Image (tube, rainbow over all chains, first blue to last red):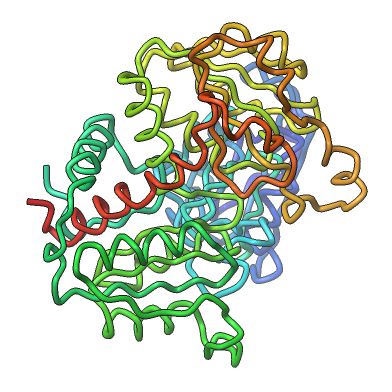
Length: 151
Length: 304
């Protein structure tokens, strides 16, 4: 029998097939401090699909589509399952939208978005490896450079 | 083609047919049209210094019979009191029919265009875009060479921070041209631009030696090493005299090579080259008026 690294959850969300190195970044963007129930995570698990993977299990909390879209920025191949009564009742497709509105911060200190209150807008140029462009200053960012808003 | 109400913000907003149409209208604007924009007002909002861009926009508007209001120093505006760009634009759009904005803050023009219900033209936003310079460069090349297709164009100087080089290279990539990027390694053309150009089938070469490529070139586009864009002043000191073109260049070029420069220059082209038939940078600056006349007329729907 396959050893279960983290306990099964009765109700909640399971995010699987996250690249190990991005697992903590994904946890951070989901604002875990605001969750009321346990979150379990494991990383450096063997994965045929991506080599080394992380898994996050969130108890009693169902992710919204916009939260799932944020996951797509870092882990476009992740799978998100909604669990009810220990069964996966729905798999949400992780999908990166063509435009990310209000999701990323532009870290260019001379971008207008750093000077005024402006809702950030980024165009997705490429999904893998990720490349996004600030709608305002037109600076292009890769996956390791993007700063995802916490809220 | 209808440009009425359009904003002119970035080279990325243009198709090849847009560019060709603007060049065509610019040529028509070489003629006097003193009543074309009668009754129209241009607001020039210049948050940082500029000589050519502001003066040529003002000249263009006056030559078309329009009027100009604006400022060229943010210290004399309410921005100094903390007014946002958004609010400044909301006010300016009620006083004018078209806005030109120049700012050191990147993306300002795009935000201004979102705030304004009237057309906004980007007169330069930091190291990002300067589309009217790109258009007058393109116009100058086409006017002097009678074509763009097939030319070999060298870019010399600060290719890392030089927005005019980035925009012009992207615009030129609509045509089958060859590009040589001549700069010290630290100031070379950013790799993502080279990659994009190559993906579009443009032959690109990189070198630090101008004489290695100059004998093949049809156009040599020289840029200033821009002190204001260097994060580290010591780095600027290291490169500020990297290239100083003088009369010795003439032994290493084709007879019909033309030297361009967006100006201002600070020593990278010796004045002894000014009187040669190769120097076209002042003519290039003069072309700014025709191109800006064309843009003002186009976005106000009055080109015909």
